[in-house]
Length: 167
Image 1 (tube, rainbow, N blue to C red):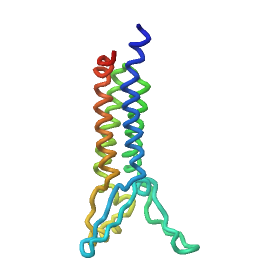
Image 2 (tube, rainbow, N blue to C red):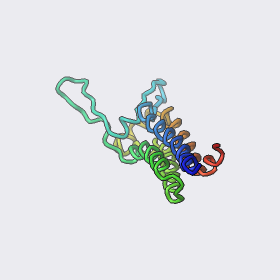
Image 3 (tube, rainbow, N blue to C red):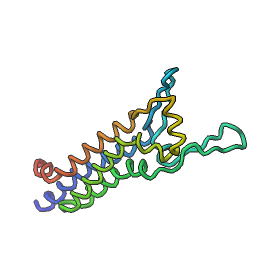
Image 4 (cartoon, helix red, strand yellow):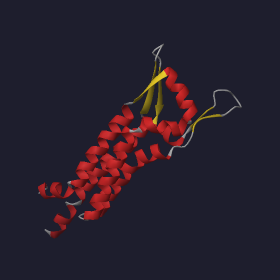
């Protein structure tokens, strides 16, 4: 009986880890999109490109660095994953629960603030020039990732109550 009661505290942690992994995987979807003010054309940038930077090699022999490494967007995707790992390994620890929940919440806030962090990747002058011609908005990857991080925070914070409901 004692072994089962110990294991049931790790089940909500595993669920929180799944939400963290899912939020991390949203990195591969579009994070920010730009809609043209005049022509209506759309340009989308994935979370992976925003986080780690990208280079354009369309011209043979010439490599142009389009986006730079962005620590804030990287943290936006890594913190929910880290929160899920902490939630899984801490079991019944109160401090672990608070740290895991904080990781999820900060990750969600950063995911919903991705458009504000694009100036780091583009450079402020380039972003100002882009915003003259395009409207910037969150894309599906940032929105779904933020929602998954919020759900992960709720599961992580209430994992003791969830464990008590498991028979």
